[in-house]
Length: 193
Image 1 (tube, one colour):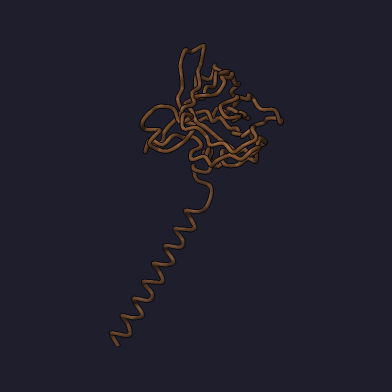
Image 2 (cartoon, one colour; image 1 turned 180 degrees about the horizontal axis):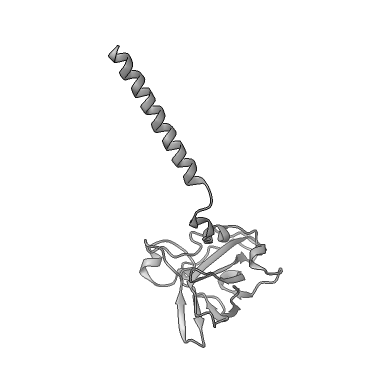
């Protein structure tokens, strides 16, 4: 009798444990927490098809700036959005505007060892606040990886990929900054938000 009771008790314990785990899992997946109020920069950067900015960015079809680079690469900046979290996200597309296949140059990563160690990226990009006389570099995560598009494929003729870069935000009084990327032309862009 005691063996039968122990087996039934174990089954009930397992069932209760599974039920509790499922309840916690469902509660963890639900909405309503503070995390739902935070923007998802990587999601907004990965969305996008070609040079069409998202509706959130409030842009028509015209990019903020077009920068020519090496090997017929064209960077079209669609938006530079200030976030309440204290950073700016620059979204756009990198396009092969030439006739042959192009590999994105390693020089776009910049020359900082920590960024270079994490593969090809747009980590060499900077924003310059001319009025505040400050330069802002691409943000990094806790492992030193740049908060920007990384590991580019070879781009065939006419092909484009969505790109993003995140920077610390200059003061709210600054509405224009100069965008710089190694090997590309320089452009002044307007910050929204």
